[in-house]
Image (cartoon, rainbow, N blue to C red; front, side, top):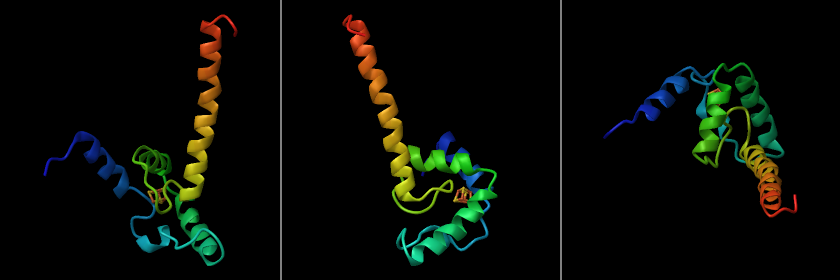
Length: 104
Ligand code: SF4
């Protein structure tokens, strides 16, 4: 199996995560409501003291990871972040089109 430079970089930050010695199940709650809420709070408290939190979140976003808590965010929160990024980018594209057509 070939390992790319990017894969090696990921392995490096992953071993530095505050969750390295935690039970992995903590980061994969069954639901984001009710009983899962306590689990999410516990997992996020680990992420809050993690020095590679932004690397972790970026990895999850770039790899479109659907399940689990990454970078302190749940799946729903990551999806919400992606949607808000798209909304912010869309008007800019529209303004650009209007500007080039002389209507901007
Ligand atoms: S941000 Fe959270 S899930 Fe990601 S490496 Fe750190 S502790 Fe683990």
